[in-house]
Length: 180
Ligand code: ATP
Ligand code: MG
Figure 1 (cartoon, protein in one colour):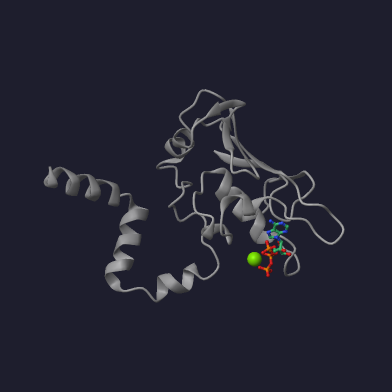
Figure 2 (cartoon, rainbow, N blue to C red):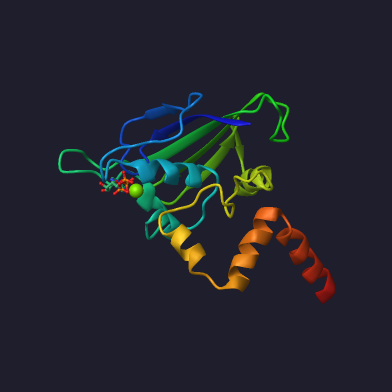
């Protein structure tokens, strides 16, 4: 599976529809402070199902919609679409290309689309589970997170290692079974 493109429209500082094609060999996005690098990462987090506005540096989810500038009116809708090359069928779907889109309106209404069809959040998180790309995974490490991992207690660090190793899921299931 490969990240192919990201299309951002009305999300945070991206008032205009912006498409980023991740060509082979691309390893970094650089730019001045405040130019929107973190917003690109947050767009990826958001389209894959992020449910916490705080994790996206906002108070409520509609805060991700372009809020306007001195010269530009605010928008009423934000949309992000992510496209994966799935020729290796790493994601358990028949399609060779997977497009996941998320939309939100000012009134808080939102929707997810999987290859153009409306789906639930659960369908997206289920699809991403165990791919290393899900909401709680470590493929995206935000600013400050590395430091917090270094400063964490050994027991907390163990949880992180167990999660990366894929053990945590089984431990949680065992715990649940023992309680029943
Ligand atoms: P740094 O190098 O400092 O980490 P960066 O390139 O990561 O900067 P971002 O944090 O992605 O920059 O972008 C911040 C900019 O995005 C700010 O100018 C902020 O005003 C703008 N921004 C954030 N949310 C919105 C929004 N909802 N509407 C309009 N602009 C927004
Ligand atoms: Mg940043």
